[in-house]
Image (cartoon, rainbow, N blue to C red; front, top):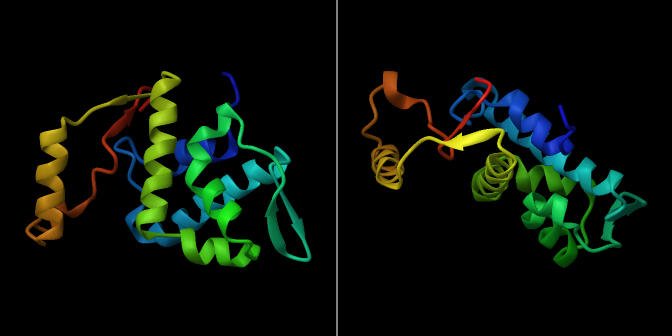
Length: 149
């Protein structure tokens, strides 16, 4: 198997077949995803850390385009490493990163889109209106199912 980025491999290992982070450890898993993405950028020499402050030193290569949101964030905000975990462990930033990583895996043939847009819309409405019963409360994620699951 061809090696993927650290973030892609972490995503495959931590999510279930519906691309959902574990419900009991969602924030920790989101922080792990942010850490994996950070390590991808650091190991590729795209960012550098000096006195715990992060600085972008190179352009983002095409093969790491799924890390674009974190790259842009780091380029615009010269912040400290611990701030990344605080800002990226959950919420819209984490969801956006998960979406792009899922899409990159789909493009690589390691995942396939499973849900129709109408299904995703219905699920989102039910979730936001808190009308999912306790059994159906598990999130479907970004609609990808891994081919090896």
